[in-house]
Image (cartoon, rainbow, N blue to C red; front, side, top):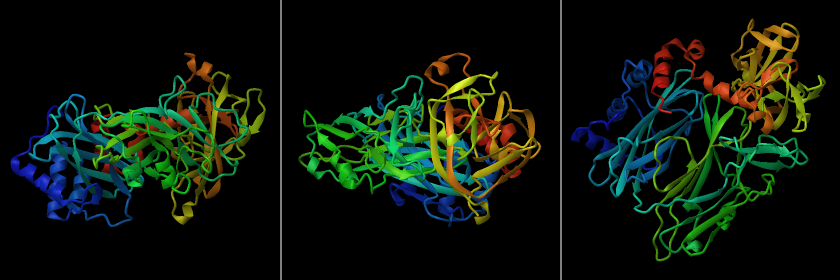
Amino acid sequence: MKSLPTLTPQQAGELLAFQRASKQSATTYLNPSDPTHRKFIESMLNAAGRTPANYPYLYKALNTGDSYKGAPGVDNVRMVDAGKTAAGKATATVWSRSSNDSLIKGGNLMVFDSDTGALLAQGENTAVKRGFLACPARSATAAPAGKNLSLLYMGHTTDANGSTRFYSYTNKVAVAQDGIKANIAMPVIQHTGNVNIWIAVGRVAGSPFPSNTDYIFIEPSANENNPYLIVPFKGNVALSGLIDLPSLTIADLSTSIFVNNGHGSTVEITRATQYTTDAKMIGAFSVGTPANVLQWEFPYDQKGYQQTNSIVYNSTSLGNEIDSYFYFAFNGIPLKGGATAPPFFVCSKNTPEDPSINCTQIPNLYFWWHCLAKGTLVTLEDGSKKPIEAINETFRVKTGTNGSSFAVCATALGRHSSDPAAGTRKEIFRLTTANGKSITATENHMVFMTADKCRSISHLVAGDKVMTDEGMSTVKSIEAIAYNDMFYALALGNIKEQAEKSFPHNMANYYANGILCGDQLAMRHHCNEAHHDLEYMLPRIKQELHTDYASALHHKRF
């Protein structure tokens, strides 16, 4: 959009009335059958440029739908930034996540001057097959910030099965006049070439350090279940007054990680309070020199979740991770004399828009995928085979790229459990080829169909051609199966190899049980890219959702 939406005084008044009547800092499901809710949804869709022609299925849900009555918390919106930019313009950003298998997510954020009722900033966005949506206000069209901001957000999610939910989020923020930028020492990218901060979890003592991983945490044994996420966090910030550290409470601090899965859902992983307790959180903060400097230290010590002093978040499978987003909010640090510092934030950089002067951005996190079942045989450089659970960074594997070989730069492990007959998600598949090869893998594991094309195992069908160590073969059978065991993955190419122009970035591969498979980075890349390929995606979704999906892809801002 080239300018702010034009609102009549009546429209602005109605939106602000809805904002004031809503529960603040909370996600609220909307009922399209309620006239007030319906009018609000329509106003926000119109302001975002979402028309019935572009989104016929969404408007059908609006016309016929009722309030969502399923499990609470399936959708959740969180404010991760608000205030004014360095140029003095009003801004805000919200993150919306959906834990269901979402096909389309959309949202519109409006920022009003709480005192005058004027619309100061607006931003809309869409996402497909992510379960995560960052929705920032547009910097280019924003007006100067006042002293107080009122945030109003309307989101919608359509799942792969066609169910649609509408929800709102509101908040009020006092605009800080002076910037609060934190100095972050950890986590940071430590290896040249990494785009995200790479953190290895679920590893055991004695394994070589992954050559291009920024941090590694050692677990008690190789038989752990899903790994706990662990993040070192160290830094400091200068505030406007002397810090009243004894008055600091756990309510003044909040943190979580949003794991964006490749199958259309995002889960919010909260702090594991049994390991990083409230007392441990508070105890990590101290007053520096001068006494207006707040400093914190959750140091990097390589220890596992039971002993580390880094921040421990709850366990998750990470089976289909594309990106993970870090969030830490300083909700109101107490100052001496009874004052409180304005809220400020440290979070992943997930938008090209200008952040507020109170937001410090760091790169996204990336933990690890694990895709192949324990016992899968990997072909090594010399032609011998070894179980994938025994592979580490000292090995080189044979690839399908001109018969060459690559070093293993990282490995990952984690437990997966799936039982389609019990109604759980189809997450584990067994593929068998006509020439007798077979692999068991998680749903987004990449299998090469030709030398320059790979697809998720869950999207292959009988008769598809795949590459094996005996040449081309066809898929004889593929089925979702019940399974419960450890799974593993490899990332290929040492630092020197990855720096070479000939290295097949996002296409590196190796033979697993004789079937040519993509490595971890190939999986991450192609899983994401496939969802942006209409020719690939439209045959895999319901016909009635085609127009909405294509429009959402077109309207995606970044």
